[in-house]
Length: 327
Image 1 (cartoon, rainbow, N blue to C red):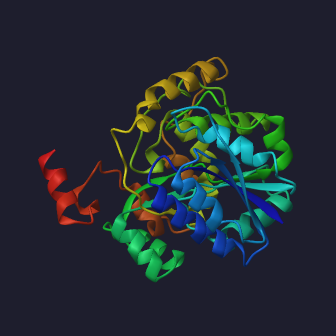
Image 2: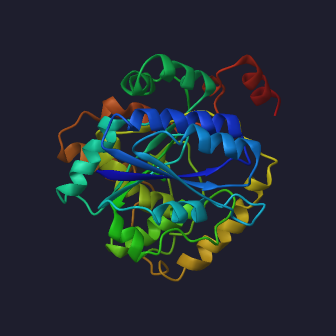
């Protein structure tokens, strides 16, 4: 059995989060996966509803506590959930991820067979329309749409993502997530960096803390590139998890912390990765090299070479297209 820990704070979009938590739980109940939700209990009506809804499942438990803060601290909630983990292996998941048993079992078996110290699974973010299609079909159908250049269903591909399978002992060695990170962003990059350094998997580089996003992970730079290199085999296998759509409250204090969190991340890791190395500016050459070694037709992955920023054909409704045109 493997334990999945998922942080829950119902301060934001409570109905959506509760429904997705129930969806994950119902799927996991049919498997050997144990689910532990780390829940910030603010003692609101939605918190009581959440605990009532999740109370009657065999392989699911809710660890509720009050985190005395107006901020949403996912690091703290993951650490709270971890206190009840008893299995040898651990899966880090967010409530918006579609639960894909076959995908997770595949990488659990790889972990058990010592094919890697841990595994980070890329994550494809869906539009509202894409989430609707997923509900009517399945992961394979949606992924085939992505690799066939359909755009209406997809926002962007995250590689690395926070979806990680690892040994429980490693989480303990690292003392879990750093609770300095509150609000949105960088607690996962920090954890993955420390986990990778535990196994000496990251090269020394003076560009590690470069903070620049890219539409395609093959064009990543900085820490996203070096962590993303650990996901290239999964990308080539087309082993990608799906992130269901949710509204984004950009003016929420949750998102205001992002710059602060990056500074915490930078100050923690700039000294560790300050030596200069000769490396490729992006992951393009590494990706092509792996395809060549494995005798894989690179044209099957043409969509990954599309790095257009915010192209209009990615928007799934007329209103979103109009906003894109007018912004």
